[in-house]
Length: 344
Image (cartoon, rainbow, N blue to C red; front, side, top):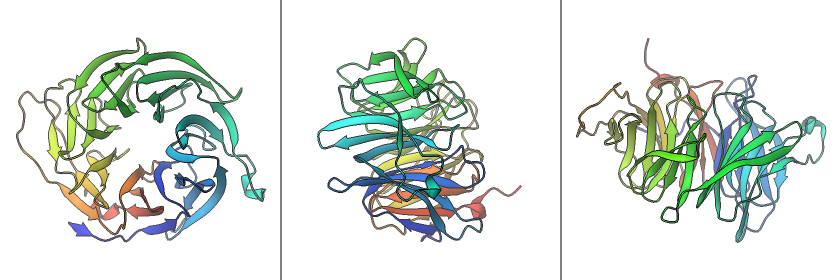
């Protein structure tokens, strides 16, 4: 099914590529997004969907010193988030806090909770454990995995352990297992690596080239979804890594991002450089002993009213039938998928 956007729009001043659901805000459906301007002062926008769902309201606008390449909201404190940023050739990462009375300040400034120093390679992302309060953070650069102990009250972050992925691999990102805070998946140029954070050792791998993004199924354990440049989307059972459980066609160009719905089983969003967001319904079986050799096409809708590549995707945890997308030209669109939900 093809369809234009019927969603609610919001425009950033500059280019952007990352957006995050503010999961800890249980009173509003809200998102954080940051800009990617090389020459101008960059911005973090806290935006909220109105109670009627008809407009996006800027709740807070904060200056950020550098280009924002990754942004993630803290799952247990709505005022805390992390960014990965760049100033030309150098990269950094930090945890920030929005000032408590930001709505009453004329030009509120972000407060630094902790700088994630220690990386010597290009930093790719910072991960929070998505399921609840946890005093650990993960940061990933092109060669290394860092595990941090974070104390937001004392505003400190200390490296608990770090490990190299090996010189033959260039890491590009990752995801943290919501069912097991010791398990993490890392994407690299030729595979997806599964790691145990207790031992900081690799426990397995999926040999796939050009995986752009991964996400865990929040509802079903051992299920991982991968987005790949040219071969679409694959769903994996982590107990059997030889072949995917099922396969989705993806996008007409690179499939850049994939997100599993936090509440509705089998609902998957994907975004790509074909300027589209696709909504899928896929239900992998519990166990597979033979490859399916089938490409199923459960495409529920394609949102294609974008003028640039779509890099950012975020489901709302508070209202899981709502998602936000962000295209490179700085356009945020919030859509409702209520009409596509399975009938009970």
